[in-house]
Image (cartoon, rainbow, N blue to C red; front, side, top):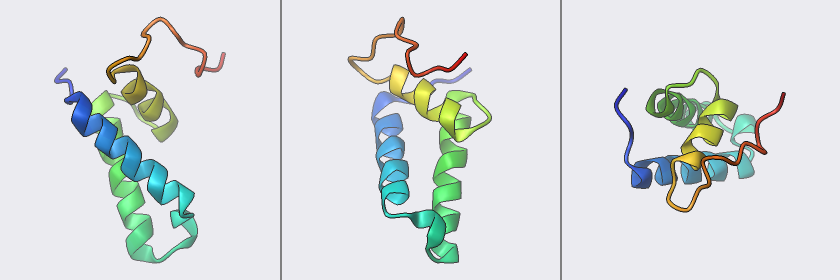
Length: 75
C-alpha cells in the first residue's frame, strides 16, 4: 500500500478537525460535501473504511507518534 506523506496527513487532519469544530455537519451542503471529501481522502490515504479509524491511523503516522500507543483504540 502506498503511504501518504506525513505533511499531507497533517493537513487533512487539520482540515477535518476545523470543519468538525465549526459544526460543518450543520452547515451548508457545500460545507458538508467538503467534510465528506476530506473524510474519504483520509480513509483512502490510511487504508481504512471509517473516519475514526482513519484519524487514528493518520495520527500514528505523524512524526513523534508512538506506534506502540494504542490508547485511542477501543476494544
